[in-house]
Image (tube, rainbow, N blue to C red):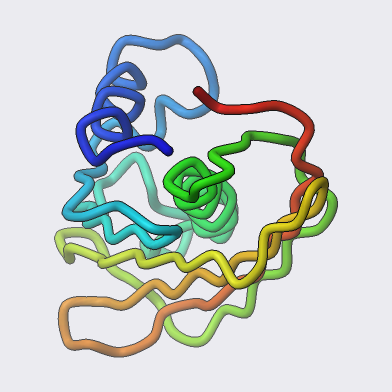
Length: 141
């Protein structure tokens, strides 16, 4: 099981990476453990689409990444590959807002895991909700 400190170290390493997850370099892990995680992140200009609201691709990335970190905090502490990601977009997040992202592992079996993710804006409105199903092949730690 990955600790809060271990999850924060994983997130911190993204600040210096050239890979795709660099778009999450401003995310902050508030709490993590027992298959649950809570993060915050400011919506910045680099996160916007042409309408000047948070890009849907970033929202899907948040569902993927934050739920993956939640899986790492379970007793099984496994990483894997995505089988299915579903995102429902409910309202827009705007530049300058700080969003809150929470994820909870619903079930983690021997090889398949399921998690929910909710993203709220500063007003507490649900911006998006998602489900993530992963094939869990290897131990995270």
